Length: 78
Image 1 (cartoon, one colour):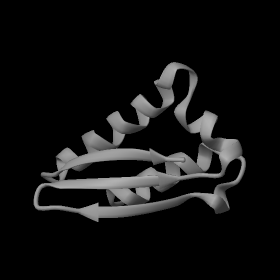
Image 2 (cartoon, rainbow, N blue to C red):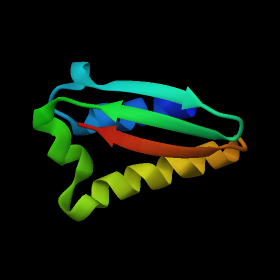
Image 3 (tube, helix red, strand yellow):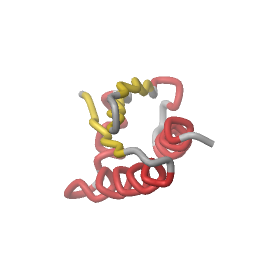
Image 4 (cartoon, one colour):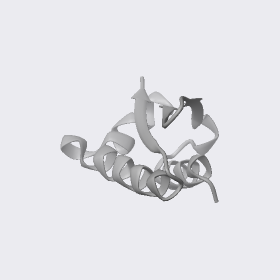
């Protein structure tokens, strides 16, 4: 399972509208940026109280990417 598939699985499990989840992968030399778009109704669920859920998602994605020798960042786009 690659990092994008992992991120997709995590986010789709959290939201009410999993069909609206859209992840764009922007790859650089050593860094990969994942732009995450969800339905407006699900934005709060992905961010979480005080941003805790967003931090947890970013930590998991960063750890998975590090195993592949890359840095990863997750940007939540409104």
